[in-house]
Image (spheres, rainbow, N blue to C red):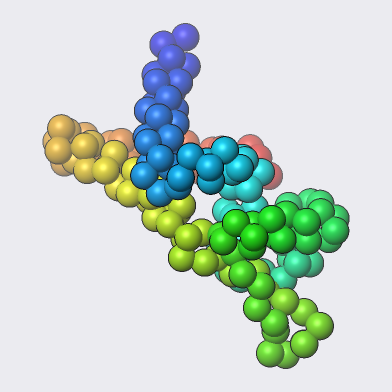
Length: 146
């Protein structure tokens, strides 16, 4: 049971850090309009690197009309922009704007700061062990999720 509690504590740390970061990068009005679904879409757009609507539809496992609705909302809020394809003028790519990128820059800073705390308070051997166990955990998790 202690492992579960420790994992919950780490999760709460990151959750609180993300909330604080969000307050620094978004207005209260923007926060009120921003949902977890918005975040999932932005994350998928970032990972897919300027996907088409079809590619995003596949990744999110939703219909193209659902993607169109969400992308239009995100574009209106300034997080993404649609860029017409050079190869196929009927097709558009979805790109993060600077405002959309800021969300992930803040997230990266949180993890960087956490890693710095680990390096500061643990020996290099301990850091290597932490890295080893995290890599193993990721490998196991990926294998079991396939």
